[in-house]
Amino acid sequence: MENLYIEGELGNYYIPTVDFNVETGVCTISGKSYLEDTTQFYLPLLEWLDKYFIEVNKPVEFNVKLNYYNTSSSRSVLDIFDLLKLYEEKGGQVEVNWYCRDIDVEVVQEEVDDYMEESDLDINIIPFTD
Image (cartoon, rainbow, N blue to C red; front, side, top):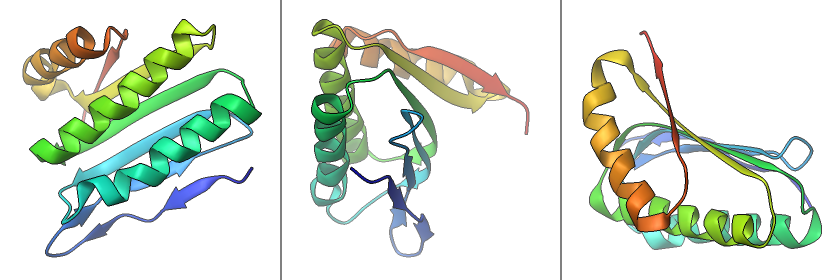
C-alpha cells in the first residue's frame, strides 16, 4: 500500500491538499475544497482509508485543515467521518482533529458539533493563530 498525496490547486475550483501516510497513519486534508465533481475527488480518499483499515489496521489520526469548503465537500467530509466511525466501532483507534484559526473557533464549533452529531465521532478542535 502506498501513501496518497494530492497537491492542492487554486483556480476556477479549489482542490485541497491531501496527505495520507501509510507508515504513520496520519491523514491530513488542507486548504480549500470547492470542486466541480466532489464525489469523484473524494472517492479515492474513501477507498484509500478502507484499504488502510483492512491491510494496515493501525491507529489513524485524521486532520482537517480546511479554511474553506462548499456544501458538497462538507457532505464528502461527513462520508469520511462515517467511515472512520465504522473503523472505530470495529476496534480501530481513531483521532480526528479539526484545525481552525482562533478567531473562527465559535463558528467552527457549531459545524464540528453538527459533524459529531451526524457521525457520532469525537472531533477535537485545535485553534491556531495566523
